Length: 424
Image (cartoon, rainbow, N blue to C red):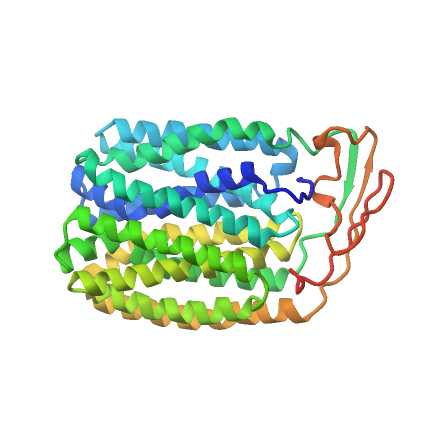
């Protein structure tokens, strides 16, 4: 699908940023839908869930089609849908049209994320590439949180920001491969590897994301209604929190694999659970800011290691996409779950429930990380017979490029044995 490269994959990082921006802007999107349209808090949360559910559906539907359609074409389709969907939703006040636009835009975001995740999994260092993506989306989301409160009331500003980001990323798609599955190549591959580990990781990350985004979806309401802060103050807290998240992402990139994956995933999730309890019980600026800042510092660190773990399970990127889509399902259910829990039990009780769930799912997630670091993965062989010269990128080894831990094969046949992931 993508040839391995030693250079920074900026087109993939930009595509990752465009696809992930919608979940990062969830609190202001849901809050402004509630305030700017005739929707209740629960209904606004349901719209946010529909957007993210559409994004997850794109990943599940397209995971096996990136090869056939081609990364460049599929990325452009996704970005076009994002511009069309989010842009139309931002420009109308008719609730059905806003919902339809959010769903179309969500599918576009999910399509862009699918292409980005597939390409990042083929990189020599997928953890570094995913870290760069999280770094960019955190910085951009922070800038939006600082800017939107000064642009007036209404639901359209955050949706327009997502649409404009997709439009800005479009020119970079010209550097993606045009097509990889052609009549000139015969691809013989084994089935999806490491099914048990991949399924466990997908199921637990779904629950992990559900807990995270149940709070994230109502964080704006906690700050405004429970902590009695203004929208400008809440937006500033979110911007600072995402800014410290940048520091966390940089730290994760610096640490790399020195701590392995089990410690950052297990211990990081436990610390996040404590931050959720603190943030959900906040009644003043200090407590709210402390919880949100600590939480948003840890969240991208843990997520970057989870994404790297998923990418290591299959160099073709299929588990990276499937695990990411499972995460999107949890993200999609988050706003509605958070609204229902907070309405029925209150914000502090909701935080306790979510924290307990995080502690439970941390155990199998850590186990997958430990096992993937200790064992040597079963050997499988991927052969590609290429009829055309390799001078054009789309005629190269594609998703079957050799691992960085072994020398490349010569001539036009590549044999790639998937070895241990512990060196990553």
